[in-house]
Length: 195
Image (cartoon, rainbow, N blue to C red; front, side):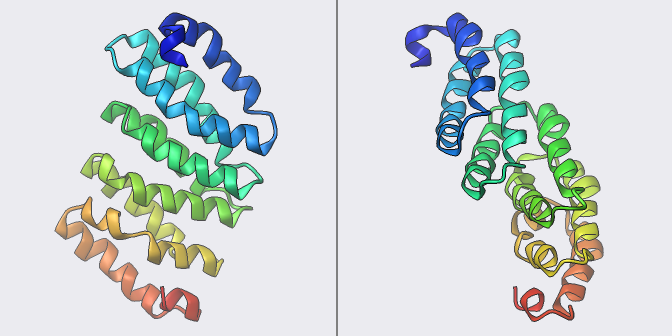
C-alpha cells in the first residue's frame, strides 16, 4: 500500500494515522504492528534523512507504548516488531533508542512482566548492538535483574542469556556472567535453578 501511495503521502498520511490506530482495540493494534516494519523498510530504503527521522519519531514511540500494553498478544507482536525494526536503524540509534527503551522497561519496579519483556528483547537485540554497549549496559542490567525479588524475573534472566553471552568478550563472560550463572544455579527457587 505505501509503495502505491508514494513516500510523501505515506509520510503525511499513513504515518500520522498510526498514532490514531495505536489507541484502538487489540486487533487493530496487532494489525498495525504487523505493518510497521514493511512501511518503515520502504521509507528507509533510500538514504533520505527526513524519511528516516519520520520513522523514528512515529514508529518507535508506538512500539514502545505497545510493550506496556495490557494485552499479551499486542506485547508479543510489539517485541517481534521492535527487534526487526532494530535492523533498520543505524548502530548509533540502536543504542540511543532501543537500548534506552529496554532499560526503561527493565526499571519498571511495579511490573515484573515488563522486566521479563525487557530481558527477552535485550537478549534478542544483543547481537545487533556494539560489544561495549552490551558489556556496559546490558550485562549490568542483567546482573541487577538476576537478584530481582520475583522468581519469574530471575528465571527469565537465566533463560535469556544466550545472545548476550555471544555478544560480549570472553573476559566479561568469565568475570560477570559466569558468577551470575553460578548464583542462579543456587537460587532458592526450583524454577530458577532448572531454567
